[in-house]
Amino acid sequence: MDLSNLKPAAGSVKNDGKRVGRGQGSGKGGTSTRGHKGAKSRSGYSKKIGFEGGQMPLQRRVPKFGFKNINRKEYQGINLDTLQKLVDDGKIKDTVDLDLILATRLAGKNDLVKILGRGELKAKLKVSAHKFTATAKAAIEAAGGEAVTL
Image 1 (cartoon, rainbow, N blue to C red):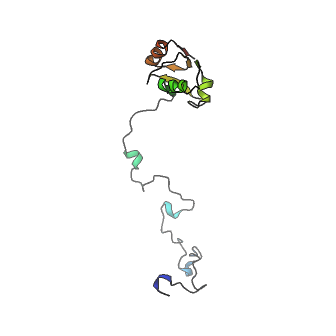
Image 2 (tube, rainbow, N blue to C red; image 1 turned 90 degrees about the horizontal axis):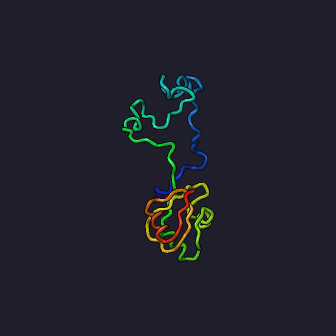
């Protein structure tokens, strides 16, 4: 036995917590250890998230800028080199439509699809998508394919 493993005898220590609000004789009557007045002395008090004791909160001190356009449309981009790789792997024959894009997991079922112009396309493809960049459309048509906007 040494100082690192000393423990009080079983049952000798009571940590039941203080019983407040049980009369003046207990020493914890009256205000029930909550002090006088103020929000913390009231029942039902809960501090708001980010409350700094009345000091101007951080999220109101920091300057705001920019805005979020609620009408913005997000497109899932698919590059030409990705399409060429699928052709090389034999997953695409001659047409690329939304069903095939979903099957290859390039986009989700609710996504809008935009074909982007990175890489080069050698295969002649009929590509159907919601949008095309100018370079992507030019590259598809240069390869003898067709770009169909949905």
